[in-house]
Amino acid sequence: MAKIIVVTSGKGGVGKTTSTAAIGAGLAMRGKKTVVIDFDVGLRNLDMIMGCERRVVFDFINVIQGDAKLKQALITDRRLENLAVLPTSQTRDKDALTQEGVGKVLDELRKDFDYIICDSPAGIERGAHLAMYYADEAVVVTNPEVSSVRDSDRVLGLLASKTRRAEKGDGGVPAHLLLSRYDPARVARGEMMKMEDILEILSIPLLGIIPESPAVLKASNLGTPVTFDTKSNAGRAYEDAVSRLIGEQVEMKMQALEKPGLFSRLLRRTA
Amino acid sequence: MQVRSLNPEVDGSPVSVADRPLQVRGRSFTAVVLKLNGAADAGFYGALESLMRQAPHFFVNAPLVIDLAEAPGLTEKADFVKLVRDMRARRLSVIGVQNGTADQDIAAFGAGLVCLQGGRDAQVPRGGQPSKAEDAAEETRGPKARAPEPAQPEPEAASATIVVTEPVRSGQRIFADRGDLIVMAPVSSGAELIAHGNIHVYGPLRGRALAGVNGDKTARIFVQSLEAELVAIAGLYQTSDDLDPSVRRGRVQAFLRDDTLCFEPLK
Amino acid sequence: MLSLFRRTRPQGSTADAAKERLQILLQHERGDRATPDCLPQLQKEILAVIERYMRVGDDHVDIKLERGDELSTLEINIELPGARALTTRGAA
Image (tube, rainbow over all chains, first blue to last red; front, side, top):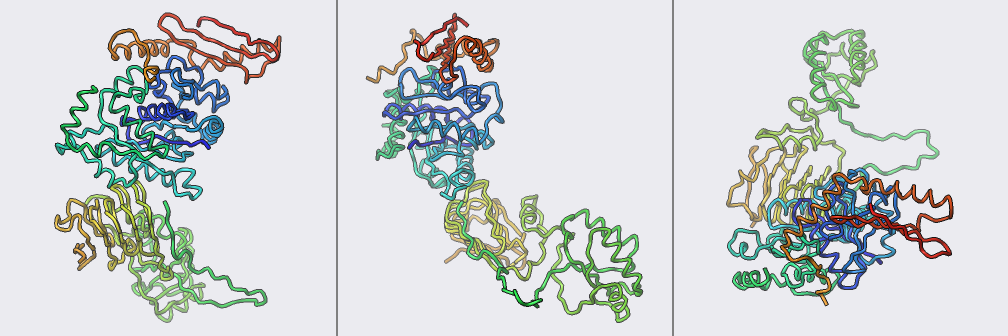
């Protein structure tokens, strides 16, 4: 049975799209048939991060409005054949997304894919609501920064109350925390909130810690999900997160890296 | 959010009365008493209308009783008929009078009104603010001012405790409208707990907690770790800036003593 | 085997690659008539023309677009029942 996972955060710029692309690619590398969907209507970005922006013909909105078939809008990744992208529209506005339309498209995708990853827009308005509404699980992307933590908490409240699972009385959408842009050196200097503090405040299980890494910008420049960059620490951190997402026990490597010296050496080596 | 209400309904006992033409049951209602100072003249109606503009919902569907202690001028049946008609024109339903003389009672009775005795005055909100608990809660958000004391709870309202076992997140509001609120998980910054009774939080309280919002000054707040943005009892509140550092992050109870919000560590 | 996933890029910094990708994309988004929004209409009209001569279901139409710097290609594949797929290829 296909699993729908929403990647969400509330706050913008924390790495939702990067994480959607990285998790989608990571799942596909593990042999899972995976599709990533862009819910940010009017601000199409996922196709750029996935590197398929020149191949967009039809989009999610065309499919919802019946102007195109789903298989016409799906773009199969050139690097991994079991990875597909459903881009959003650059020209429409978010009112084009309807709950019923989104539900139909997701039901159709469930037939062909193992994982459906929904890239939520920032905020808590319509697009974000519909991205999480049908989800079976959520990945909440949070930066170690007060406004991001608070927005994540708000989103966790919505996942627990404004989703189909919540309406059915299934206790809302179970959420995992993906801590991104984490800088152990700054944490050690007391300039950045500790992972433990953020976990205590949000009280949800940790899916992974993505270190602040130049590999992320490099990957976005090239339009390759950062997971493909298996030499980078960010790429490996996403790989670990994907393993945990599919239920494998992987040691949280960051936690072991308490000495900042060791970590900065690692950073220098891979940068 | 999983919220379980332990005592869901009051007054829900249907009686089988198939073969009885009528049934007598006692029931008490809350009425609004309007004290008439002098005559029911233009000045009175002007003041009444301005009060209604301030609190448009306060009088809606409320049975109204006229207090005649300061209105010796109303003595004729016609006076009362006119009063009832003028009030009805303002969508107010007068059902009776109190504190009248024997003559006034007879005249009022003639106009179809009930002469009430006994009754005890409930606390009336100052400035005629609406009595809804939520409105009171909104008020406490404003600048440093004392929130208006809301009206007395309905005598019939039975207590109903709400127990919450999941974290209360930023932007969520849990309202225990008839009794205590017990939260067995963290309450995030930006979340709001509101209860007519006491509030217990078995976890860190980082959001707001407003107990006794119906004006119950005996209500208390118990928390395992006080990191709150705001704590209020019966409309009296303190924000995190005012909190004494000695109780911060501690196991604490909050209560009112002589209209002052006090915090004491739990031993 | 993972080197398989690396994109083959002309030598140069990744920042240059980013600039190039954006230039091509934005150039098309700003002034191109073949924006995705006119494509559904284009597809309908093409189908209507073909259907004057033969029967095709709209399930059997596949449109591919590849935007390039110099040249963009629009590829329309229509599967015909009982016949080999007919390929129409044209520069957009």
